[in-house]
Length: 332
Image 1: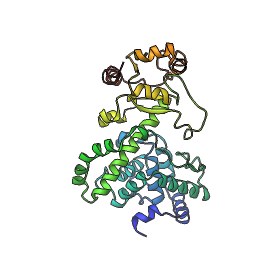
Image 2: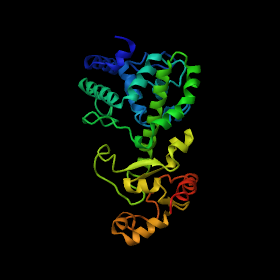
Image 3: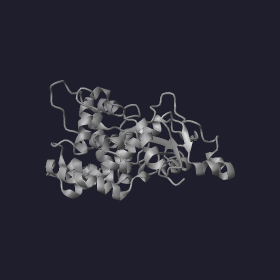
Image 4: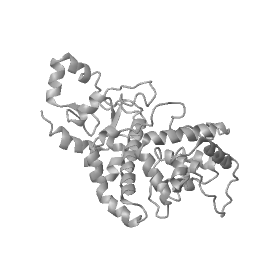
């Protein structure tokens, strides 16, 4: 097997053997060199990157990394910093990262269905050798589910917009990672956009308690089955935002499909005090049309955004941009 095939075509028997090596490993003594990451560890780190952005943690803040990083570090008998460094290797941001690992990441992140299948194999193989949920939680909640791995928020992205955003970065990356071919670099950067959008949408949904901030719609269905019931999208659209703004959860609102479309098209706006405003034409329709009243009357539409007590509110600068460039420009 080639290096890449060890990851992409990992077999259950090989995964079980590797997990046994992991659980039989002694903790690394300070100052001693760590053993190399096994494919099962590397692949689990790749799956964890869907939830955790390693760039948020430096050497002095690695101990603050959120789950599943601390749990994986305990299982692997490694410090948090090693798990975060492996994530950096996988996304190509470390120049000394192994080329084959970057290629594996580019392939699997571009094909979430295949990544989901590999992840299931890793979890079920770990369970078969006695690694239970406490030691290795099913953090993507896929092991007992036949559904494909779902990346959230993808409907907001346009292929042309992604390609346009990635194109200038390709040459920059090629200059620092001459070992990677252009196709791998482009595929990895496009996958990074989609993963970043997934993390953004996940954070927005959590921040808003998985509830429409306009009408309060929530659901008791499993998150994946309810994915189309709630949408986490940008206030200042993705194509208009800087890289930092695209990843900023304060630039997002959770909404049901009806209110998401109304906000995105400028039929609704939110002021700095979080009060919800309707375009005059929509307000008139609410008075005259029972169907419009059922969706945009008050209730169900709230007077102000419905945010959990511990939620971080949207940033006023994004709301102001939306009012100026979308709400004010929309047909009255």
